[in-house]
Image (cartoon, rainbow, N blue to C red):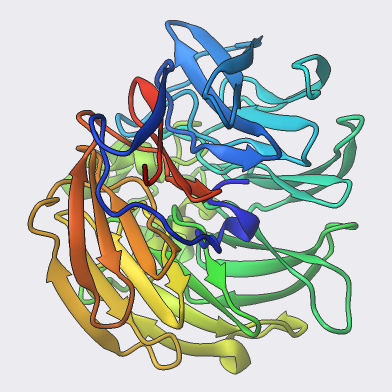
Length: 447
């Protein structure tokens, strides 16, 4: 899946290269159409998605040679609006070792067999998300999970991985747009759970039934990164606009606002009735269901949005019902990444944000261990950091891949240049590093 086993970004590999690039320690390079999905490795295959013009594709490559084994075009039922940092092929593949499962905002989910034969397709959407979707599918046994959070009509769906038929679907009306991929957790005394971070809270669902088991509040209003966990704790990062400490506002209840602003007394607010230049400017993000009015749900989401605080949150795992008071451990709210997921590696929590600012935290306390800039890689970051061989690898959008000596007091070992923009998260296996750029997939190893 995205970022390896359970989205952790950790590989148990040794003897990885420190210095590499198009002219050094290159095993192979395969040209590919652009896409933001990350390489997913299993068996002798590498899976990716991409787009070319109006067409959407899934690719399977030979892991040893980089040769494309098959390429299949997916249906494109529509062309939805995307944020400039998103792409029509952002979600990474899920695979069970034989079959692959691809999600596209403009269609839904499609499954292919080992030789690229189509097994089934399951249309999803239209999605009410002005940024486009970003979560990736996740496999748990025979169940394929897909988070579909959006401005209105959010839901979490489970499909049978062999037939594509719906096993369950849970509506999530209290959640707005989100991009976080769920991760899995098996309690000692209960069935497998999917842990999904969304607007304002983290929720644990039973994988087989979709039953909500427990949740914790305290998240920001828009979740992009995927959480990471250890045996007993989960670390959830969220940064969203106008939610840093000190930016919060107390917003009156809807009923009180209607008394003064609802000029025609129809129980709803129009853009003209708001009589507030700031709110009028933000109208598209306030009218969540795009019906031309701010109703009670729209206002409640606006209230919540203006009250929450960005942060990395540490929670204990498990429980029943609302576990906010019992499970909340700490929050860190400075120098937070926007898109990159955190990395928990060898007892240290790593964060990398735009500007090449790298922060390490003690996962037990949330105390900062070190914060400094990566001087040779100061640009924006979309890719998530990964760890292996006692090293941490960070990749900027400008294609600067920094290798660090892992540890709370990390050290820079090298900064390598890929020559072009990079959005996917690197994958590590077999003593090799696989890096996707805007036009190719690279494989690097010590020569």
